[in-house]
Structure formats: structure tokens, C-alpha cells
Amino acid sequence: MIKVEHLAKRYAEAYAVNDISFEVKEGEILGLLGPNGAGKTTTMRILTCYMPATSGTATVAGFDVFKNSVDVRKNIGYLPENVPLYPEMRVKEYLSFRAKLKRVPHRERKTKIADAVDRCRIVDVQNQIIGTLSKGYRQRVGLADALVHDPKILILDEPTIGLDPNQIRQVRQLIKELGEKHTILLSTHILPEVEMLCGRVIIINKGKIVAMDTPANLESQLKADNHIALEVRGNGEKIKNALSGIKGVRRVTWRDKGEIANFAVESEKGTDVREEIFSSVVKNNGIIREMTLAPITLEEVFHQITTQEQEVTA
Ligand SMILES: Nc1ncnc2c1ncn2[C@@H]1O[C@H](COP(=O)(O)OP(=O)(O)OP(=O)(O)O)[C@@H](O)[C@H]1O
Ligand SMILES: [Mg+2]
Image (cartoon, rainbow, N blue to C red; front, side, top):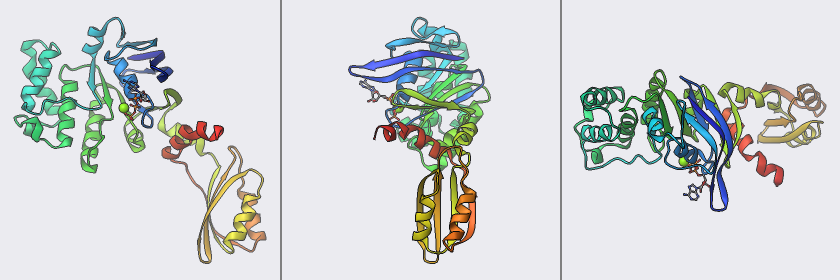
């Protein structure tokens, strides 16, 4: 549904997006995950024809983003980063204005608006002035706007930003439902969002794609056996030093709680140092109370991937 090849966008000196390629398949919810300034919004603006690219190609529903902007826009519903709502308008009035702008034929407008209002659960506020709505409801009006011409594809730029936890849950649920009917590309820097909603995730950092996989695969890719949590009764300091000396161990962090100490042992990828840990603790008169392979969360994957570059050059 969306195909991006070697896309790049350069502002003055720097590349905001630098040679990215990816595809979004029909029916998929793909998450674009990245820290501030990664290039998420830039990518979305190019795909929605708000901005030209410096180089590369992109098609949406088979239409070239740079040559067929009218057809592209017909197929896309876009929820921008800052939803440009008119605060003095009433919800329905606004949606009607937007539907007209999007050239929804007059005879279809009423049903299309009613449908969007219904799907985004804003029936109760449809006659309210937008400026008086809570942020969560305003976000839903933005989503209704994105939906009103019934596009195949939805592009949602940080759809839950600035919402309270309840609103976040509701908007996520809504997106999940929309995913049953639409192909969705959404951006976020919130990891649980990706885990909850997306079948696939692209991690983008400094304008480049650094990883692309299912959330589960990304986790297991780095999980393996190199994060071990340990609880020991004994001399924490001594044991910490012993653990640090084991071949393959990269880092040991620990917390002393009197007679009991907790350790987090990180070893090189692909190594399994559990047996060495065991004998090393015993040798230092410690008693192991617990040893587990700590599953790495997507949060850690994200941190590792997006900070790797800095660590290498540091
Ligand atoms: N109009 C512009 N002129 C110059 N630089 C820009 C412009 N727009 C964006 N940038 C730069 O491009 C880079 C990518 O910005 P972009 O808004 O795409 O990031 P983002 O991933 O959406 O970040 P955020 O999570 O903060 O929304 C940033 O370094 C930003 O400063
Ligand atoms: Mg952004």
C-alpha cells in the first residue's frame, strides 16, 4: 500500500531523512518508532504530499507521491502532529467543511460524516464548539477528519501525544479498531504503543532505519542469554568483583541490601555465563537465592539500537 525507496530529505546542512526504504502492506499497522528529531514527521509529510523529498521515490496505493498528489490524498487520511482544528467551529460543522475540502460528493457527505463521528465515538459532542473540547476529544475529531473521506490508508503522527492515561487507552483502542478496515502507518516514541498496536515496527534514528521487524522479534533478537539477574546472600563487593572478572562479562551492576545483594550481569551477545557465575559465587562464599535470564524489553532494544552509534564513537 505504501512503498518507499531510498527516500531522503535534506534541510540546508543536514539530512532529516537519509536513504530510507520500507513497505507497508495492505491491512498492516506499521509503527514508526524513534526519538525526537528522528525524521518521523518528515517521512509522513512527504508521504502525504505536504513536502517534496530531496531524492528517492514513494508510492501510496500505487500512486506516485510526487506526481499524483490528488490521487494520493484521496487514498490517505492524515492526522498531523498538531491537529489544525478550528476552535470556533462546531465539530460537525468542521467535519462538513473538511469533507467538502476533500471533495466528498455532496450526496455522500452526510453519511460519511455520520460514519466517522460514530466510529470515533464523538456522537455526544458533535454539536459542541471544538475549542471547548478536552484534548482527547479533539484528537478524536482529528481522527474523524482523517477518516471522513473513507481513505484506504491512515497516517497518524503521534496519535496519543499529550493525552492522559485513560484517553490514551481509548484512542489506542480506537486505532486498533480502525486497523481492521484500514492500512495504518503510525509514528510514536512510546514503546508500549508499538507493542500493543503494531504488527511490525521500524526503528528510525537520525534519519536512518536502524531496525525493522515484529515487536516480538526485535525483543528476542537482543534478548538471548546475555542479561542475567542474580540475588545472592554474601559479600556483595567481593562477589561483584569476581563476577566482573568472568570471561565474556561486559558489565555488572549491583545493589546491596545488607546481607543480600542483587546483581544484573550483562555478557557479550551469544555467551551463556550462568555456570561460571554459579561457581564464582560459591567460591566467594556466596549463596545464590535466585538466578534468571532477564528478558530484554522493547524499551531496552530501542535504547540499545538508538544509542549504539554514540557508544561506539564515544
Ligand atoms: N523545516 C525544517 N527546517 C530545518 N530542519 C528541519 C525542518 N523540519 C524538521 N527539521 C529537522 O529534521 C529532523 C527531523 O525532524 P522530524 O520533525 O521529522 O522528527 P520527528 O521524528 O518527527 O521528531 P519528534 O518526535 O520530535 O516529532 C530534525 O533534526 C529537525 O530539526
Ligand atoms: Mg514528529
